[in-house]
Image (cartoon, rainbow, N blue to C red; front, side, top):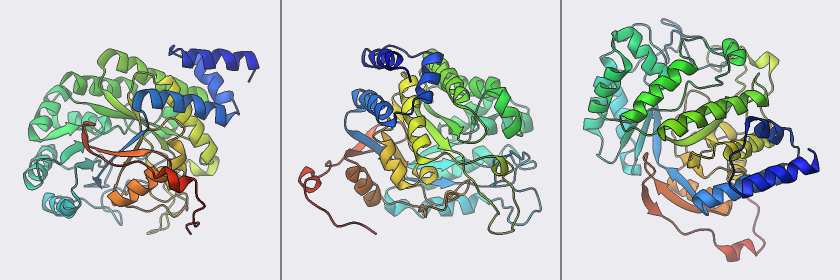
Length: 388
């Protein structure tokens, strides 16, 4: 990057000026990751101090049967296919209740677009889960893609669907289904009808009803940096309008190779893609934090990045390390880094402190549940045994 442009961009960030599309593309072209990370860290520190947020949650996927066959997805199964499943609501309740002793505060529910399940299955499942779990457990459920699917199978508009789901206990949508919005890329990776127009319509509607939602971006496949910039700026514009996004979550595309259970290759992108490197992941967090000036939080989903890269992301713009997760089925350990499928509260506290930050436990609404002591600064000055 030209030294003059570098000074200009740094001055804009330090002055709190909004960055443009051209600025975002220029930031991605920089090979100075330390400089990018420093700028992003400055912004995250201004917004969130030395805090890293986390929560104790469980992911629940009640069915993997899906009418779509998105090119990047190895989770979906067709009706009758080996390993296709659909939970009875009683089974979903049993799995959710298994974490009660861990002081669970969030249940995160995402499903396939099941071709024959009736619409009533979904509000009923929320009602039964809400009834069975403590009041402190928030139901964060369904992507905008699922809400759009519910419109199709129920004949009801999203306005009425959201009202019924909220009445059943819904506290937030999930951020999925966004992938990359630009049609140049999207037409090659997505096999359903929910694109930017409907995705944004549904989140706008959710925000108008008082729901706060996350937003996401799937990066590191066939897209280019300019598509990432476009994606973030669309979300930034919607946030200007509604103020309803609490957090932005960059999700790293995963190579899955052969499915471990039936040997099939479902991820049709991997033959022509390379997963984003750790450095590319950190650059994506940094540029996203710098561009998305009106969203309070940036989350690193450690399951898709590995715990080491997740720790580093906390110094490159991220201020949230997600939660304990448990049994994340949609993508897991595709990078062969040995990423666990569960971190306990104590694990998260240790990882956050190791990265030099102060852990704060939050709920789905980003209300603080408990603040913890930060890292022991004396230990940082002393040689420590290497963990193997």
